[in-house]
Length: 603
View: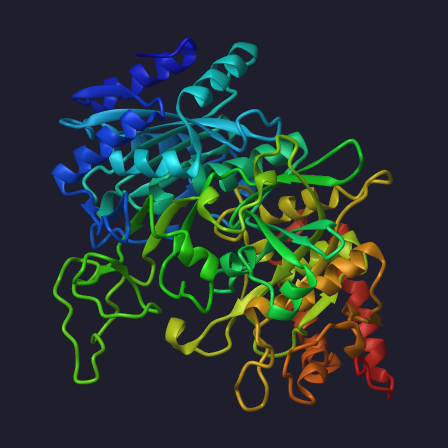
C-alpha cells in the first residue's frame, strides 16, 4: 500500500532509505490492524494485559526507566533566525539540526517495522482541523495515536485531497525510539518546513508527535501565519438551568487541576437546580475567528493522555470512571489481581511501575511511589461521561470566556476580570505558579508560564503576545478574559477555597459577567466579584475567608507589577508597545491607589 500523493510516497521512500527498516506498514486505523498490533506487543512484552474481568481491553506499557517524561532541555525550535525562536525556546540552526539528528536516524530502524501514520488533528471534516503524517518504528506509538487522533484511511484521504491543491499541506513527523539512549535523544521542530524529527524516546509527547509537537509547537507557528490560535487550554461547556451553554477555554500550568476542571461535576445544589458540565477537551484548543466576530474552537485531539497519580474518586470521578475498559496505561503499578494502581486509589499495589515487587512498611504503605509520578493513561474522549457531542462539530464551539490561572498561595485573588482584551493578554502573559519545597527545594519561587505555553510555543513569546493582540478588531466579538487562583492560602497555611466542584461557583460568576447578569467591583488589577455576587448556597465557608480570597493587596501588587515589567523587558525590542503601555497604565493605577487612604477591594 502507498498513497495517491506522490510527495508523501517520496518522503516515505527517503526515510526508509535512511533508516533501513525491515518492512513498511501504512496504517489504516482499522480494528483488525489494532488487534494485530496489540497481539504483536503482547508477544514482545511491550504490553501486558490487565485483568480482563475488571478492565477489558486494557493494557500496561512499561517504558525504559530513563524515558519517563518530556525532555524540554533536548527540545529545539529550529528557525533560520534565532530571534524568531525567542528566549523562551532552545534554538538550533536548521542545517545543524538536520545534520545532527539525521546522523542518528541512519540505520535506526534496522530489524523493525516502519509505520506510516496518517492522522487528522480535529474532526475529519472540519475546516479548523489540520493533518499530519508520523513515521515511527514503535507499535506503542501507533496504538496511542489511534486513540489520540483521527488516524487512518479517512485522514489519508483528506491529506491526499489537500496535497493535490498545495504542496506542503501536511505536517511531517519522523520518530524512532533509536537506542533509547538519553545521550542520543532529541526533539527537533522545523516550523518553517512544518517538520518534526524526534529520536531516542518512546514516551508520551516525545513520541506521539501529533500532541505537543504538532498541536502546539508547529500549530502555534501555523496559527500566527493563518490568523488563528493554537493554545494549551481545556474547553468546557457550562449549561445553566435554562439550557443555555457557555463555552470556556482555560489555560493552567501543570499541577493546577486542568483536567479536573474540564471534567468537573457540579456541587449537589447545582445539580439539583439543573446545571450540567460538558467536556470538549482537556488539554489543547484551536480557536479561529468566524464571520460573526466570535472565536470558535475545536479540540484537535480525540483522546486523553492524562496523568494517573492523583486521579481519584474525590478529585476527578469522571476521569476515573472512563478508565475501566479500552485504555492503555503507562508506568502505573499493578495490584495482585492485575488491576492498574497509582497513588490516590484504594487498595495495595503488588508490582511497581518497573515490575518490581512492592515492599510494604509496617503501616502497609510502600517505601516509595509504586506508580511513576508521571505515569499516564490513554483513553478515547468519548468514554468520558461528560463528553460533549459538540466536540465533533466541524465549525467548533463559540468561546464566551478565556480563563487563565496559576498556583499562587498569596496575592492573586480568587478571580478577576480583565478590563479589555489588551489587559487580558497582559494577565495571560504574566501568569505563573509558585514552586513547592518538594518540587525544587525552595518555597514560593514564582515561575512565569505565559498562557501555560512556555514549553510549547513554537516561536518568540514577544511575537506570540503581538499575535494575540491582533485579534482586537472593531468588528470582533471577543471572549472576556479572566484570571483565577484556586490555591490561595490563609495565615494558617490552609487553602481558603474548597476547589474541585465548587469552582463552578466562580465559573457561574464568569458566565454571568459574559451575559451582563452579574455585578463586579472595579479595582486597579481588574473587576472582582463582590461577596454578594458569588453563589455560596450549600457551601460552608467560614466568615472572613471570602473576604480574604477577594482582597487586593495594593503594596503586594505594586511589587508584582515591577516583576512583570522585568519579565516583559527580558524579551527585548520585539515586545509589543501596546502591552508595555498596558503595564504602565495598571502600574500607575496601583501607585495612585497606594497614595489614597481608603481600602481597595473590600466588600
